Image 1 (cartoon, rainbow, N blue to C red):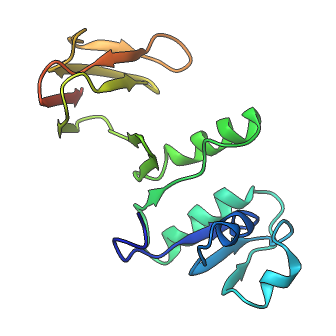
Image 2: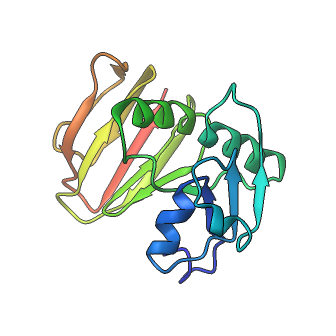
Length: 170
């Protein structure tokens, strides 16, 4: 996806190993570089961030913000151990980026925002509030100023009934 759209591929530390194993060379590797295979360090452009008070994904997001590369399309945060996944999601929600893990695409909508999606009918849609009050149009189970909280009440496994879905965050 990234290569076909001529987008830079930025790896977080050891993810560079996985990308190279898939035949993809990251344009940049960011992190404390303690997980990347040592032989790759000399072959790839890297940004070495020593700070051990933050995880590599957090350091990468901060660096991308500092060089004006946010929002971005972010992938790979859904793999691994549950504590890493939860921490990655926690960091992701502050980025205003797009989460991409085909066939899943995730967006962050903030208070006062609305978004219209053109989707095939019967597309699965899950909404999580942190917290949020939302209204929807075009879903099987419509929400009308419905309060969503995480943890708490959310709308998962909803379905589109129209080729256009509208979500408003109050």
